Image (cartoon, rainbow, N blue to C red; front, side, top):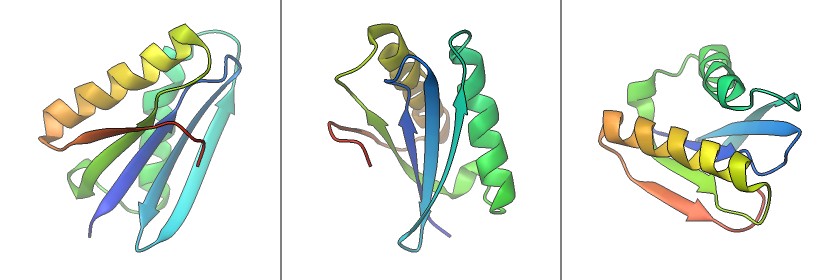
Length: 98
């Protein structure tokens, strides 16, 4: 199985993640004005678990590069880069919301 992980943390109140599997997209988001950095990884873990996907099934990570909250965008890009380095996969950036 091959999956693409999407991360969008540009909104100062919301962190959103999605996974595309066989051209179907599944999304999860969380609203909070504080600790967005602590919301992203649990959201990813929950989303992958709900669809029986392992981190090793992810072939690419796409992260939203803005415009949006500067700090929020940094969080999303940092999480994407860290996961991509760990998994040895590419990160691409997109400028329009999914």
